[in-house]
Length: 208
Image 1 (cartoon, rainbow, N blue to C red):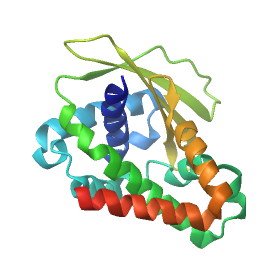
Image 2 (image 1 turned 135 degrees about the vertical axis):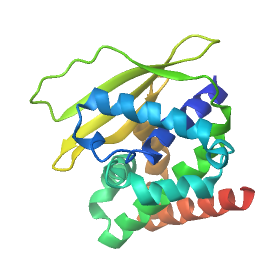
Image 3 (image 1 turned 180 degrees about the vertical axis):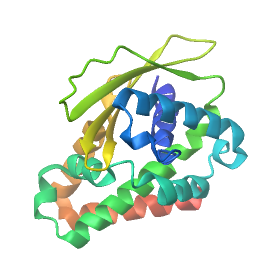
């Protein structure tokens, strides 16, 4: 189950990597946005040998060039860091966001090679036209195995809908990292967390 969760989180985070595939995507309804991005992700993985092989450099390039306008990585990082974010300087916040984004890319890019005939199906979407924070629920299906829950939390901003959290098999990404980051901030402060993330990214880069 842990390995399956790893694969799905790779698929989910890769959805963020190609989020700017269409300039019209961010202005679409949130469920339509997730549907279009999911289809784009699956097609990209199948068509791009470097991406499918788990090339972290390729994934990082996609993030740097396309993801930032369509995914709120700063909010994702802020929620993951928790209360310590309030006392962080602008420079520390920028470093945390950069290192957390790099950690996600390097940790889960290798899981993309496990994607085969997977498809993403939307589950019933319930939201009011005035809602500015919604959850789009999907399920990942393949020729073998039961459907797996894969949900996205989005916020409506001046720039359109942006993804800032992902739920894999009932566990939200932000909550998962929040428990880890909290203990690191308590023991070493914000600089200690930045150092830990930087060292972890360095270790992952050596393994690539």
